Image 1 (cartoon, rainbow, N blue to C red):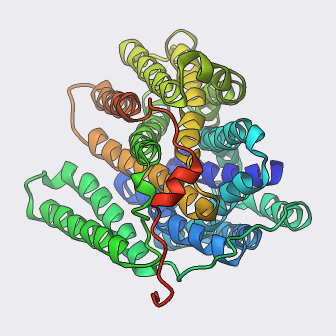
Image 2: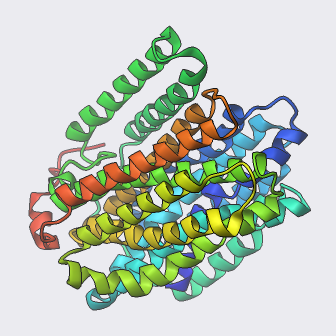
Length: 464
């Protein structure tokens, strides 16, 4: 369990650890604005999202432990390259390598957990796994703030010793697991179309702030994104091993959890970057001070995920209601921050209450969403299904960060206007996620056997 948690913690940490390194990276590579630097984050997230599902299917075929070790090795090598990058372009390319490794090791980690942990212990194990993932994402700015004081390249080099230790422990402690009924090769072209669709939407959101939504460039990006998305859907119905498995989406819980995760992680990504930018530009906190200011929120995640959320499930009548409660608590926390936000620093009375309340909401929502989505997965599709669920999280993060960059670029009469827009955007995402949870995730979870019946199985003559 600890070894598998290392994988998700590292991958989530690197989603946001670079946030507080943006100013230092921008100073070293003069002339780069927030929109350009955001691609250091978005390139990682987009490639991460595109790799997850094919990698999950590959892990089911070749062995989940083998995939976990391979992903850890690529991720660790990409971290080394990030620290050596001589420019932003090289850094984005190295982040892409990192993302490929993360995209391989995360679905392998989750599918190993689901395959190895006994059914009666799975809910608690899922809570720990997902909470550590959320903790890694939320602690990214905290750890990044401390490392930037040494040098921004250490934001990436810190992964090297952890990655090596994780590989050795995985080889020694983690049992192998695979789907013995191996099917066709995964749809790599469909994964490319998926990455293009997400990247084009993110690019349109960033460019819309400067060019306007009606500009030819933005409309062209959105049209290209729609065509790529259509290609993904078409291939998913025709390919024997599609990037998006239509059969899985026949489960109401699975598809609802995926949709809610996109919206929730859009809020999560927007919230973290908005808070970091506010602390460093308006309150003039150093990277270390900003990281420490964010720290109390993440500290609330693990106890609420491990202790509170499992007890609320029987009390509230289902995991979907706990997820909706987490979304509501997060929205209230952001509403409180919207009311209290002020130009003059007042951390204890203004930001800290919102941080503590928001961390509690994260601890309730994230493990509940993952539990709802993974509860009905058949054993043979653990890697594929977990890849789709994690892909939904990354897609949401990309869209949230891109939408926030667009919101921050809108001029206002005072320094707080842009950040208020960012808070309002975060609240809107959280409310939308809560609505999906209430509408879709409040029914009883369908058993894995029932879902497995609806899954299409490739005919023997079908090839990739």
